[in-house]
Image (cartoon, rainbow, N blue to C red; front, side, top):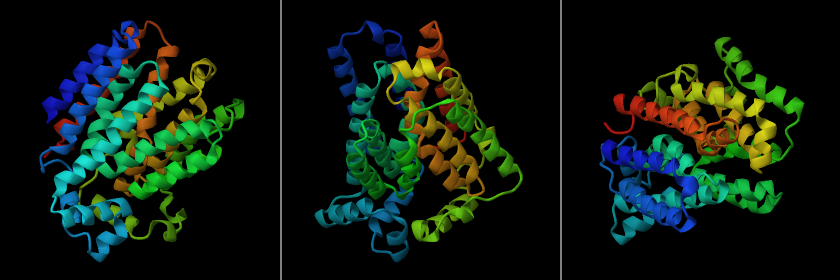
Amino acid sequence: MDILILSIFAIVVALSFIEEYMPAWQKVFILITIGIAMILISTFKPMTTADADNYEFNFYNNDNIIIEMTTEPTFLYLSRLYLSLGYGITAMFFTYALISIPLKLTLLWKLTPYVFTSLIVYAGIYYPMHDVVQIRCGAAIAFLLWAMIPLVKRQYFKAGILLAVATLFHYSSLAFLPIFFFGNMKINKYWKWLLGVSVPICLLLYFAGFSFINLIPQSLIGGKVDYYKDMSETGVSDSLVPYTQLRFMAEFALLYVFIFFYDTIEKHCTYAPILIKVLALGMAFHIMFADIEALGNRLHDLFGMFNVLAYTQCLYCFKPHYAVRIGITLISLLHYIEQMLSNMYFH
């Protein structure tokens, strides 16, 4: 599986260096081909893939009261439907991949002219993380990314519908609510200062031992917190604290690049106000809930797909472009190698 994913990664890296010279029809054809390959990998992954055995257990025991409390409606209803039709867990993997991957690729095509550069980050970090492992979260993120388009146009009802759909796939989508209410606000100098100090302040509070988990109303999260605590205690999630993780450090640098070059980025990217806030909020959540590692990582991962676009904006800030692509490639590749060596994706 590592070889298959790294092969796709190598292909999109190579294509990123020539994408500015490719006609649109070639890009579309290649995107469709890559999408089909990604769907097949996600569908027919081995059951030694992280989380696969949990999905299989939940699939065949969907009437268990604990599973009903901690599992989203889409997974429960689809499980019951497929079991009644005689299908197994592979049908569930295929369904989630068929929803998530084409939607994400279509949105990347729509949201950035540098689609293959964005795919470097997607293929190296977020495709294996979301669409191979965290399939419910992966599907939810596709709808959150889609919600960014009507949100920028101030079509709040449509954005709200997409947020609701995302929540049906994964309850953690509710963490997107601050972006829903404040994402469109123009970034002025005060916002830049706020975003610039937000992550360091969260780090200071983290070192001081302050826990944000007590601020969440229990009615919103039910048994999820206990579930994530169990995951952390049994070692199912990452054991690294946020500030030691390569991806977190890269995002920390990206945040300040975004702040410093924001006026330049905004000229080229309509979605810049949302992207910078999502970047800062995702990092803040990672720190705020780091004492329950699985929860902190999951909230951080939820916003990761937006960083696929955020990294791409560096092309407007630095030249030559090939140097930016090399830097993005190294970040993505090193992250994948880190996960591969720790058997994080495939056991």
